[in-house]
Image 1 (cartoon, each protein chain N blue to C red):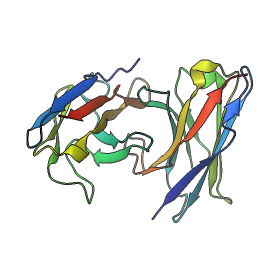
Image 2: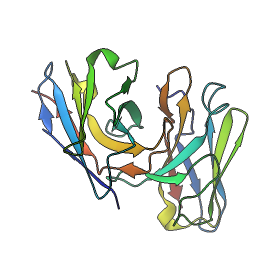
Image 3: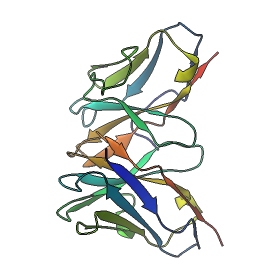
Image 4: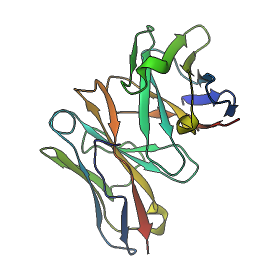
Length: 110
Length: 118
């Protein structure tokens, strides 16, 4: 059972803005950086957002991350069909002394 | 460009030991924290633990009693052994690398499906 809580699904139409939430606690999101991963079926996760808000080289600026207290969000603007994937949040947890992942949010582009 | 490749049996008998190796190429195995992450079919990601290039390990408490991780810097490889497996251990196992004790996995292997079944 994931300690980082994400909605299991989200959807939007092309061009829309979609947000995916990730809720944690003071021992993880509240005190550590949040990371977001994009995963297509049959492939490994790919780092999408690091240190709460930063984008690795090559990630479009349509993707953005934010954090407030013990919750974080991933926003996708100008939604495209190719954005249809599963999105995972992750953070180090001080109590666990290890990495926690959210359960993943499957994004459907209608 | 770093490349990670998992290798090992795709089928393991219940109660046996699951063994996987990850080979690092294209860059140095130093100074990364090398983790294993698994994903049961249709489910989310679960961090299993890491082995630092020095050999220091850190395991998920839920799996700690059954886990052993090691690193062979001369071969640029690190390994996972999980004992007394059950069907619940059936998953795609990914190896991944981070430069610190964070969830910042910049490098991933393609994943290896391991099925526990007789």
